[in-house]
Length: 299
Figure 1 (tube, one colour):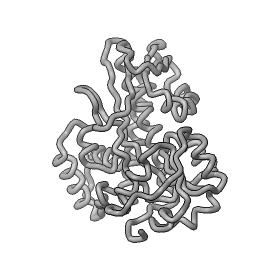
Figure 2 (cartoon, one colour):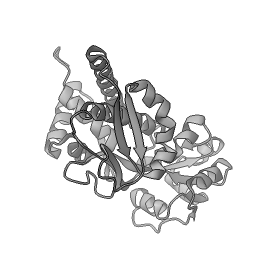
Figure 3 (tube, helix red, strand yellow):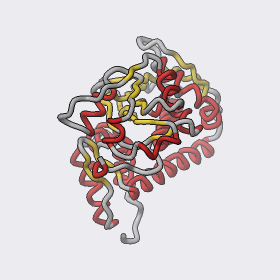
Figure 4 (cartoon, helix red, strand yellow):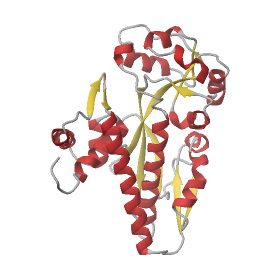
């Protein structure tokens, strides 16, 4: 690669595409065309002499090189934002109202409060769960289309993760082994959507469905089989080692969208909160990849 300034536009596209596993979703988030994302990434691949993405089913799977670039760009973005905040200095505490789904708040966001306070010590965050709150500065919503609303953006697509107790992980190193195992789900239809990705045309496997996510995850911890969940619900279990991801994740078709207001006095706080939130989501997504990426060849 020639000596020149880093290709920030291309790196931003790589980071977004790596997170979403989709050029289309990356283009939607960056407010550019699918062609612009694709061309930026292709030019970067040519310069690097390395393949960054490979199509697998309906997803664009990032290579190890792409994941490294995405992580480095994310860290650089956060470092730059932190430096700018230090230069600007304290500007007084701001109150920021954030609406989010109650389940998302309980299962994931609540555990991030300490990190949020460290990152944004001058911002008071007021968390609400009333989805119809018209006065909220930031609204997080689940969507089946992505980018809901004229000013909405998609933070990420919810991904189905097959998880099991660590001592059982070696048993589930292929799609066939997973399908043959006792299957557990924390929502109806989850395994059907997963099967559409990994075993198209085959009758969806039978699964025991719990209407309580914690019960489903605990059943897998006890060796009850493979549970299908998502990283927001299962992060505490993954980070503590009580569950492990076995690979073969699949997109759910459900997106976490965000809508923000650019009201005077809160725009800066909202932007900083969103930067922090995206970084935390990326950290969580990394937990769901498991010790190694599984390939369709092993299915």
